[in-house]
Amino acid sequence: MRDSPLRHLLPPRFEWRSGNHFELLIDGEKYFPEMLQAIAHAQRSIDLEMYLANSGEIFNRFVTALHGAAQRGVTVRILLDDFGTRELAPADKQRLSTKGVEVQFYNPLHWQQGTANMLRNHRKLLLIDQQVAFVGGAGLTDEFLLNSIPGTPWHEIMLKIQGPVIADWCTLFQHSWFGMRQRIFKSLPVIPSSAKAGNQQGRVCASNGPHAHHVMQSLYQQIDQAKQHVWIVTPYFLPSLRLRRHLIKAAQRKIDTRLLLPGSFTDHPAIRQASHRFYARLLKNGVRIFEYQPRFIHAKIALCDQWVTLGSTNFDRWNLRWNLDANQEVNDADFAAQIRALLEKDFAECQELHYTHWQQRPWYLRIQEWFNGKLDELANRLR
Image (cartoon, rainbow, N blue to C red; front, side, top):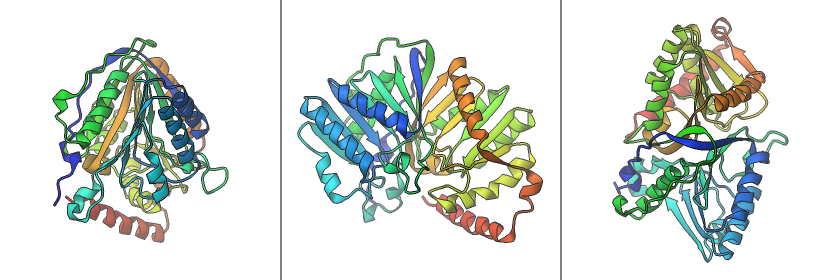
């Protein structure tokens, strides 16, 4: 089996930093214009790291903006995942590179790699002039703005970040970028900390699925310390046994423990069906489960009292096994209140499930859960 660069990318551990400002950008009609405007005003550098990119209007807007920046003399680096860009038209891949733009594709697919082809870069990051970052779960695809079903774009959240944590996001990008070239990480340039932009405390937390589970380890710790709320939003609920146990223990401590998961709108119905086999035990032990009804919810957020983590991590077994991911953690009462208000609005548009009613679901749904659950278990055994 060919060696994959992903195996060598043990992510750094970053410290908590004060003096940051975090701005919530809700849905594509908000964050895409902000990101494009930031690209248009870039003066020195643009670094873009994305898992998902498909041919379409959003992709065209970003390529045009990035090319325009390069023509102004801005240094542009683009790191895309090879699997996540499989639906890019060949012509779109070719026109990515232009003078001033350097492009790399992460862990190119190859038959000799075997299961190493599953090792993916799932991060979503845009860095402008090493001063501003956009982090979250969105990709360069029309589903986040122009879904094929009219009026139902995917529900997603991005963060606009300023302040000292920007230096850590820059370090993380360079870790991936130079790792692709198998450079020695000790030779990476040192990024000076950005000036204070606010009074919020934050920490960058990154994971490499096969070797380092920093995002999930931090989540487990915060769940155990929570006194009031444990609310988790994830589009693909295939949780580890460890996460399920932490959630149940929180609920048994009388913590308000909730899951906000997709309803019938999902891009992977089989994954949703497989996730249903976990519901009964969680519901029976006091974990509240809400399925979002208006459209597909693609956001990845966890709230434990005044601690928040938001980014690319789906909090599932697949991330633990295969993915490079990264989240922004925030420890701030005001920011947590914004997240609570956002999620309370989303909960109001959900159908809450209850144990007694769940136990009465039709037999054919149970067969779907069993079958897709077996497929998930088989995939989980792959090495």
